[in-house]
View 1 (spheres, helix red, strand yellow):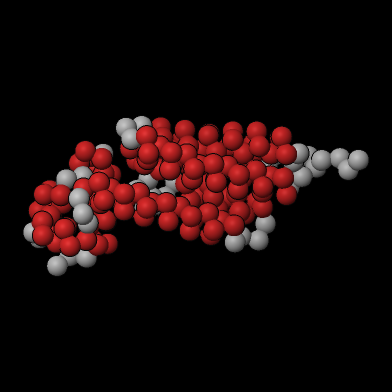
View 2: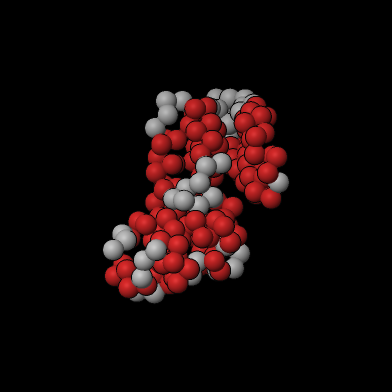
Length: 184
């Protein structure tokens, strides 16, 4: 009998290959060379599988955020977050999860909450580096949106993937040009 994690990995791979519509129990069972009975041992139905895939993505995204937070300086914490945005989280890229969210309001709300947490994290780092709260918020939003847009475009334009490091350095330079808040 295949385990729950195998089903989740196979479902994430199916979603990566063809979107949420490609997550079909029969096709995954066939790909895993097992019967559908194994699926029902772990999941009530397809929506339960999809919810578990999303929960896995959320848990991995939280771990990534915690890993970034563990870095010693704000600059290193920001750099860690930006690097992690380019990596699949829980078997899915953020672009894939956002594409799913465009079709499912409940998914969109959960993605929005993770994005809010990331922007707050960036804002906190920029504030610690001396930006005013308003400036830190604006820079956090701009930097996050720039990275997400770049990665979204790169998901459709394969040649761009190799340039993400240079892009992050440019955004990082612009984002981190912070003047300390005057002490009045």
